[in-house]
Image (cartoon, rainbow, N blue to C red; front, side):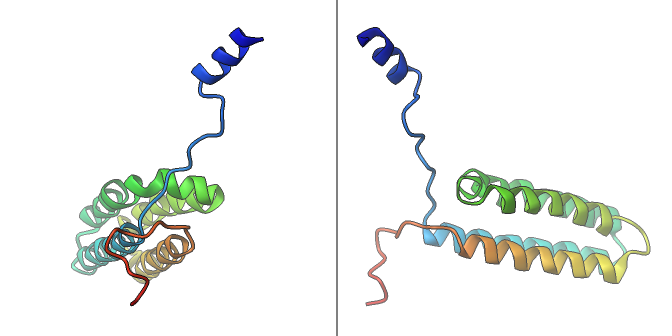
Length: 132
């Protein structure tokens, strides 16, 4: 029995550690995604469709992907949906003639990222005094 228990513990079969995120990190990520998508929208309105698509994908890699693991632990379905939507927005915003629809998609994506990140359980930062 003891060898099995040792194997069990060595393989990490216990309860998996749920990754956490601070409230500051969640808010910062939401704001960065919004700014980044706004930049992609600006590129699109300036006729830089290909650059706008690359900016959306860059936004995903630089700002959403780092928080993806804790978000996935909290809400797998929403995380998959957001990942998919980043790809759809990047594809649509890079298409010529997609102007208004693509811009609307990018704005809705930023809104969804904010809502999903706001729903995450977060840990307080060291300096957080609970509003006191």
